[in-house]
Length: 148
Image (cartoon, rainbow, N blue to C red; front, side, top):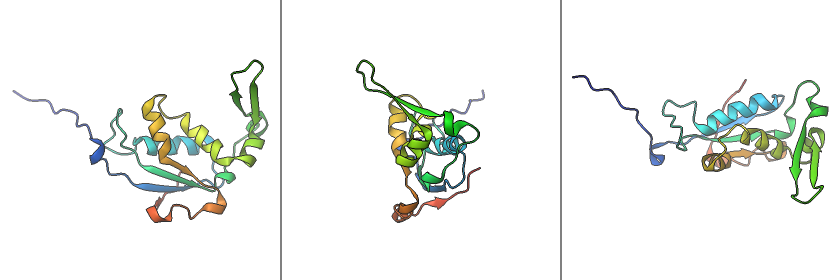
């Protein structure tokens, strides 16, 4: 009688985590975010387990140099509500990228991760720095990869 091979689930201590660095200069926001989300989630590894944190850490440098295509620069807005009556706050993309480029990339990547406790844990594997702080994570010796 033949026995079927069972799917091997990776334990958290068995997942060897690496650090990757991605330069966001001239990259489209959505394409960058989808690639970063895949790496953080661990979908680029053969040992991917959907319910475990098997992903790697990602450092995105030059966050202030990310671009969006077409009319998105004028049309894209970020919404926040204060939970008070009339408390809807809208921030245009132009303002958000100038004030806080880390938020723009983190917001895009978080939208592509699971909406549960695992996603809350995985978003902490994303480190976003602007052009002035490019050497912030040199101690982790990140592997530089070219995306897109």
